[in-house]
Length: 586
Image (cartoon, rainbow, N blue to C red; front, side):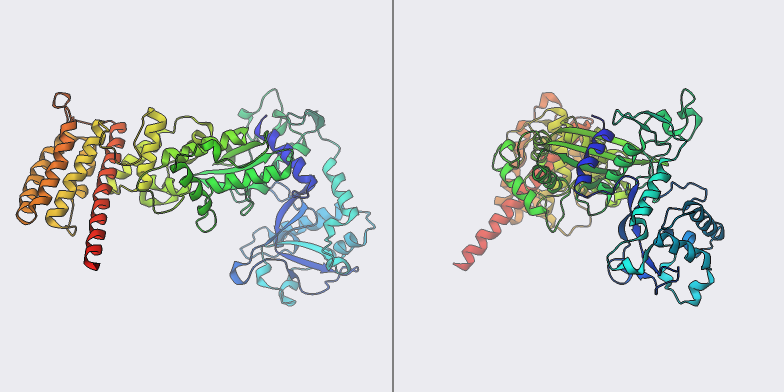
């Protein structure tokens, strides 16, 4: 099943529950309501429909006749629009506001010609009598400017019945949509013969795309067309199907919908399909808690799952209790000029996708763990970005990584190179970065990378990282931690990439530091020398223990070894401090 066909199926299910607007309508942000008397006079000041307080007010989402797809032309919407069209008022320069307002008046005069409906007649009378100067004369709020407006009869306002909700308005809108000159063909999504959508409704809410919306399916150049077809006829999709898939996408992409998450530049939506709606809801909540962790609400749930994984529980025991046959869909969208590109689309049984993701979490596990109990995908991705800014995450990286996780395929190697590059630049060896490197080693290189310090792990890169951590600890023991630049600050990048150039110098410096330590704490010096000796014994002199260069894979192991050994020293130091405090208390 294609992504668009799956979205059409989702629309059919959601429409029966009233979660999406009916065909021909869409959820739009409406700021104000103008209430009219039957004679077309205004019943009072416009009513603010926005939600919230003060500057945080946001327009209310209402189901209105779907908007006309505007590019550079002037095209009014049916029974609603922004103030430039409805009132001839705008907050900006408004070079063509008069033309927009006149088009709204003329088009509605044509659309509503011959109507006997009291509400529609009231609108025509209002437009005939209205002049833009009245906005200031009547003292209407400046906050109205450029907001979307709807109308209602004062007698129906308290029942929340708007003009576009009246039966005759709905019937008229259906006739206008049907038209008489529309091409019919077999719809690729429904398989039924129906009028084709020439232009598909805009999709809004994709990060980085145009705020007015963009399209997945569009043909605006001759190079994109074939066999003489124009626009949507090149990929025949019925108006009903086009409306259905765009309505569902706009619903899913809405903030707070519970169906979207942002992974890098990929705006990702997900939904479940099941015989019982409760099962679908449970699957969606589980997926959201795993991937879109909110620091305040969801981290405990995921933290509990990770703790069970750490205890050795198989991932099959951690899946939610769901009936078999729950299908799950994940769709990644990214902006591409005026269009949207489908970064990935995954459809599978939920237990398969959940198992894959839990295995990914297991590959990320590292000791000691990150400070956050359950870091989100975004939190990991910003560790690959310059200055840890979202806009600096490598293009395609987030989408490619999520697709690899959910399809159980190797991770993108750009993830490996990005982490290594950040380590060379800022030398911040933290649990998030090390966890990423460990997961790549396991998945891409089929290695059994250790979770915590493994004294028996003999990989050369791992041993060199451990040795570097020992040399750094020796420097700290000799000079304290308040030095201007540690050997990590000076040599980490070079030691990980070109060990031969650095380790002889590090060994010489460690000898001087050990002499100083031996004068004050001879026993500590002996222990540090033993630590060096234990690592060196595992290196084979005949196998070039200090190679000229290390591959990206070996550099990842270097970082893993350094992190484990470094934190082993901290663990022993904390244990010694605790013992000292205990002895003092006694």
